[in-house]
Length: 232
Image 1 (cartoon, rainbow, N blue to C red):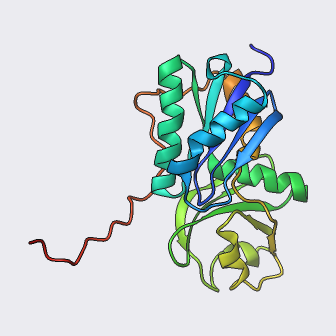
Image 2 (image 1 turned 180 degrees about the vertical axis):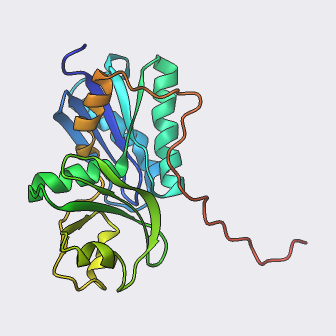
Image 3 (image 1 turned 90 degrees about the vertical axis):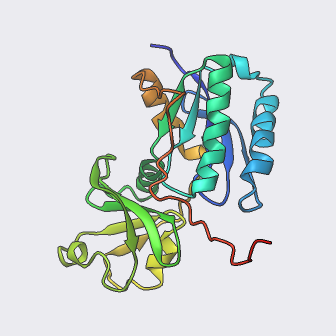
C-alpha cells in the first residue's frame, strides 16, 4: 500500500468548480472558480495552476479523484471528461468520490453529532434537490433520490425527534420552508477540499474506475428545451 499518494481532486458537480492537489489527506494547493458554470472555460486552467503552484507535473500524479455526482449534467460531464482524459493519456487510476457522502462527512466534522442524520443536498430544479441520508460514520441510510421540498418534507423523521442536519447548496430550499426544531443547517458546499479523505481511502483499497466506461451519477437526463423557431 502506497503511503500518502499524490492525487488531483476535481469537483464539478455544481455551479462552481474547484481543484485540489493533495498528498495523502493534506491539501497542497487549491483553486476554485468565482464565476458560475464556467467549467468548460476554466477547469483546465485551475488544474494547471494547482500543479504549477507545487511544481508538479501530471505524470507525477498517483491518481485523479473526481466528485461523481449527482449534480448538474453538463458540469459533471466537463469534470468527467477532464479526469478521464488525464487518466487515459497517462495511464493513471481514476477514483470516483460520492459527492453527497463527501458533504455529509464534512458536515459531521463541523457538528460532531453522533446521533443525528446527515442530509446533504445538491440543488436541482425549482424546489427539487438531489439528496441521500447518512449516519455520522458515513453509512448510507437512504438511497439517493430527487426530492421536491415543501413544508411536509421529512415529517416522519422529525416526528421521531431525530435531528436532521442539512448541508450543500440545496439546503437553503429546506431552510425557507421547514420549521421543525429538529431541522438543523450547516454551511458546507461542494468543494475539491472535501475529496481527499475519501479519495485516499479508495486509493488504499484500490477501488478504481474503468476509465473507458465510467460515467458520473447524472441521476437525471439534461433538461433540454426545444427551440420554438420554425426552420426555414
